[in-house]
Length: 178
Image 1 (cartoon, rainbow, N blue to C red):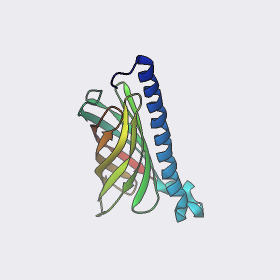
Image 2: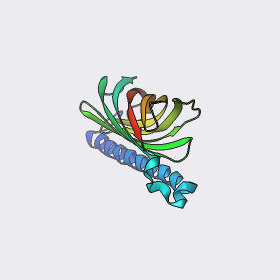
Image 3: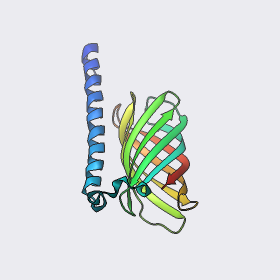
Image 4: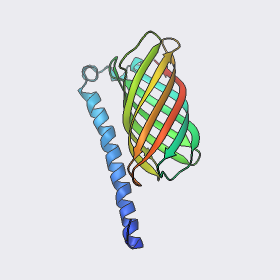
């Protein structure tokens, strides 16, 4: 932060945290605004259970390029909503040792073949008190039956808090759709 005094640096950190929260809330608001524009939402079946999913996964975080934390393994919990056959909205909470993250994103299910269902994922992730940024990744579902699926994701996140650093996230888990 250059030749700034300690109070100036502390104020910059406070403003950065405020901006982080504003951007994250704006992203979540934009996601739910997109949901509100869909025909299904207007018809009122957004409370139908068959559109919702819940999953749990093991997570491995590999920071690169100056990220201020070490490799960590942990647990991720996801909640999703299927807008249609191709688009899902999703929120995720992640815990890795002493770090926590919240993310809001979308899945684009671009091609499905019986049990194999690959997707692109994108959104914003906020590592509380560490870093935040946008992510773009790829993953796949392996559908065990109509309700249960195995899920694997690889999502690099470009951090914006402390310079340009990458945090690679690998998750493997199970998901229940209703």
